[in-house]
Length: 246
Image (cartoon, rainbow, N blue to C red; front, side):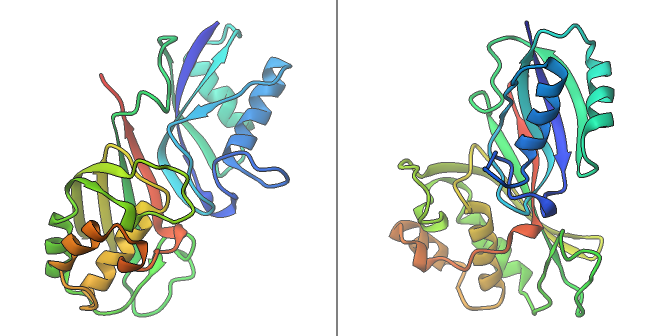
C-alpha cells in the first residue's frame, strides 16, 4: 500500500462544491468514482479543504492510498484520460504514509478575480465577478494592512459555520491588476467559511467609500458579521495553492 499526493485543478462552475453531496455533482464524487472503478472497491480521497459551489481551484491538493502497482507518471495519464474535462490532474507523487492533505497544511493562497470592464463579459461570467464601479485602490490597500496578522475573524465568517475557534493568521494580501481584471491575493494559515469572499466584499466597500480603511480595526474587534461588507459571489474565487513543509 502506498500513499499518493495529487495536485488538481478544476473549473467549479458546474459543480455543487468539492465535497460529496447526495444527488449532486461534486469534484470529490467524480474522482472517487473513477478510483473505485480502477481498484474494484471503494476508494476515498482526502483534500486540503472544501470549496463551495462554483468556486474554482488552480492547485487543490488531495491524497489517497492505493495497492495498485502503477508509476506516478502513469497515474497522471490514466486519471486524466478518465476524468471529465473540468478536472485536471496536474501532478502525482508518492509521499510518506504520515502525510495528510488536510492536517499537514501550513498555508493556503486564494485569489479572487474581478472583471472591471464597463460591460459584462459573457466569456468570463463564470470566472470573475463583474464589478465596474469606481474604486479607490489606495484606500483598499490601506484597509488590507489592518487585516494582516493574527486576528479573530468572526466578523468575516459566515454565521453558518460550526467552527468555534475563529482565530486565523493572514500573512499577505496583494491587490493588483492584470489582464483587464482586478485580483485580490490572500495567503494565510487557514480561512474560515466564506472568509475570503467576505474580505473581498468588505474591501470593495472600502474602495467605494462606504467603509473607511481605519474602520477595519473596529470591525475585527466587534466580532459581528453584520459589521463587515457583503459576501462576494463564488465565481471569482480560486484556491490557488496549498503549502506544506518541504
